[in-house]
Amino acid sequence: MKKVSIIIPAYNEEDSLNLLYERLKKLMDNNSNYEFEILFINDGSKDKTLEIIKELRKKDKRICYVDFSRNFGKEVAMIAGLDYATGDCAIFMDADLQDPPELVPELLKYWEEGYDDVYARRTSRKGETFLKKFTSKMYYKVLQKLTNVEIQKDTGDFRLLDKRCINALRKMRETQRCSKSMFSWIGYKKKEVPFVRDPRIAGQTKWNYKKLIDLAIDGITSFTTSPLRISTYISIPTFLALIIYFIYVVIKSFVINMPIQAYQAIILLVLFFSGIQILLFGIVGEYLGRIFNETKNRPLYLVNEYNGERENNDIK
Ligand code: UDP
Ligand code: MG
Picture (cartoon, rainbow, N blue to C red):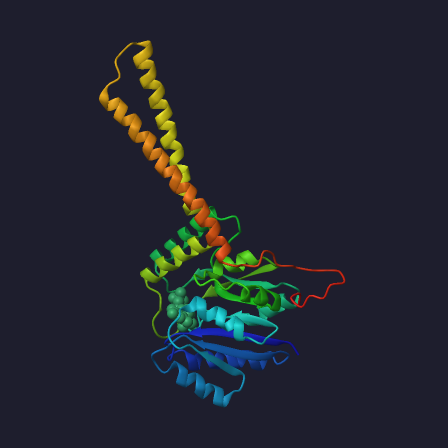
């Protein structure tokens, strides 16, 4: 029997856990051809979240939990979930029932068909403000422009990952994490499943605009070093302006025989030295970017399939 791990990061979710368990229990009962493991990551909750999870585990041994020593954030909770998951596949789900457990059978269906990364794409987002939807849309646009890897739009963390995606993600140990970009980066066979995202069932959202902006910046800076290149690009118009203005001054003084004026010399000097400075920044940035990428220590490649004599435990 195949085992499915459902990973649920939870931070101050005491109000939703019992409802969540009921819906999950229904799911597990209706899909008895799978073995289930529900792995809660208690991310330093300050309310009764842990106690409720412990209660649930007394009732139902399929419930497991990892209790963090403090709040580390959802991204870290997710990788911890992957580290501790024992299933043949893992499904991320929010504790607030915004990701309906009823969609899981469909995710499993595509997994059985051979897809490695089945992600739920929200077709509408109930109970979220216009501003949040708009900023999230813009963010995807910018992120996509800056990177070469394709990013899935309107996709949260609600997805099913095959064992080999889990193994791949376990190898990515960087501290500034942006799961969204990692899911794209690892590749493998992906499948999209549309769903309607419900409003949060109870409690408060843990996100505020500061956290979202932090996440956005982390996302961009962890995914790409192209902002470092801004400097190099700015130096180009600076040097162009320098050359054009230089030609203009030279023609004026030698062809038309007007004497060079002090302010013209100053403009030339300013353009020259600021151009050089910006360019040097750009060069430093290039090296910094390379150091940054090396220190992430990602695997160089991930293999989809191998046919040969060598034993390799990483492949399925
Ligand atoms: N979460 C977490 N650690 C945090 C913040 C959030 O584990 O520091 C969990 C939270 O319990 C929930 C999920 O991440 O299960 C999504 O959080 P939330 O619903 O607040 O985000 P939103 O759905 O509003 O984007
Ligand atoms: Mg939520």
